[in-house]
Amino acid sequence: MADDLVGLPPTEVFHTQSNREPIVNISGNISMTAHYTAQAWVCQGLPWARHFDTAQGRFYRRLLAPVWALGRRMGHTTPQEFLVQRHCIMDALLRRISPIQVVELAAGLSPRCLAFAQEDGILRCIDADLPEMVATKRSLLPARLPPGYRQAALDLLGRDDYVAQLDRVYLRDAPAVVLTEGILTYFSPEQVAQVLARVAGLLRACGGGTYLTELHHGDQVDAMLLGRAFRFCLHRLTGVPLRPLVRNRVQAESMFRQAGFDEVKVHHPRDWAAELALPIQPIDSGLRVYEAIMAPRGRHGSSRRR
Ligand SMILES: C[S@@+](CC[C@H](N)C(=O)[O-])C[C@H]1O[C@@H](n2cnc3c(N)ncnc32)[C@H](O)[C@@H]1O
Image 1 (cartoon, rainbow, N blue to C red):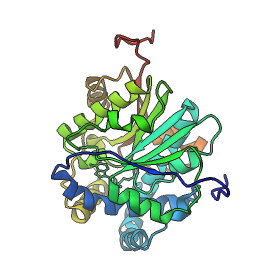
Image 2 (spheres, rainbow, N blue to C red):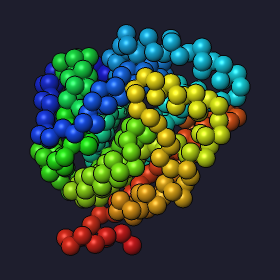
Image 3 (cartoon, rainbow, N blue to C red):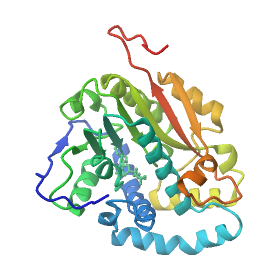
């Protein structure tokens, strides 16, 4: 897929208004990890990823590489590998679902919306993050971008719900896929409940659709030396104490259903390894990709799905 476009006008950044909560101070540190994650996509050669090959990201990748090399020799999946796994599985699901619009929240330096904005049938791809990250991403991109691509600055934890304000950007009654990748783990269960409730609200406003995200099952992560080492490194880098949000699939399903989703599907990287040529190691990293489905609602809020 070509990632240089000529002759298209630059898109505008849409800013929501929200009173900031103190959590945003933490988010500043979380933003650093977006540079590290982008390195996995750069190395994988994903479309548009080369724009996000930052010096900060390279520094973290080189710093941590020896630790992960050791873990790999012991049969563990390295973070670089599971970052590729989750991203590629979500992309494959996105292609399979084939929505009219895509909204990636806390997108960081993800190249996904830029790439999918060039796919047939997808009319709108919205890349959303905190204003500072949106500005950073913008500064790394060329002036001319795909016509369906939009950027929005919003705070997932802001006191004011961003959903109503975003209605100038998303398409009404156009089935959507909303994604978050690599963010829920930094939030408390209460904050995650708020994030999910707003995602559910956004999907309802779009006339139904699917939420894609990843979760690391605590039962596997806690039993794994490399899992605990990775959590320790992230804690040191971000200052946020990290704990797996759910222990297993049962807890995850119940969390999505409580947020109002109608159906929940779970994907194990092993099941996608052959199709996507994913790196797979013998020890289960606990990574699972979740597909939480919101059926189209009738006028009075009842599900139209049978
Ligand atoms: C760990 S990165 C994940 C980025 C990307 N999805 C990935 O997989 O690399 C976290 C991203 O979440 C953003 N973020 C943190 N707190 C946020 C908040 N309250 N609202 C919106 N975005 C937030 C950060 O700016 C950062 O870009």
